[in-house]
Length: 93
Image (cartoon, one colour):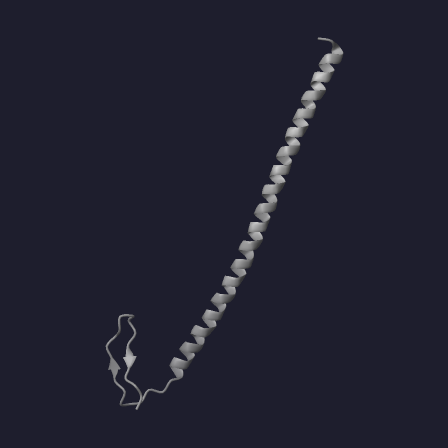
């Protein structure tokens, strides 16, 4: 094999290696872009769920405040606990 043939073979091998690396880089970039998109979606969903939790916590706090301020008549009787574990006060007269 001549020096020129060896150089041409080395050049072709280097070109194949460069093409392979370019393909791998393109695939890695596509994977990175997809992961970034999914992470953004997850952040949006987390923010939405955080907002829902905060709203529910505010509602629960309001309900507790209302229940704590509620006046129960002296003649009201407490009934046994229900399946949910909550006791009930007889209807107001």
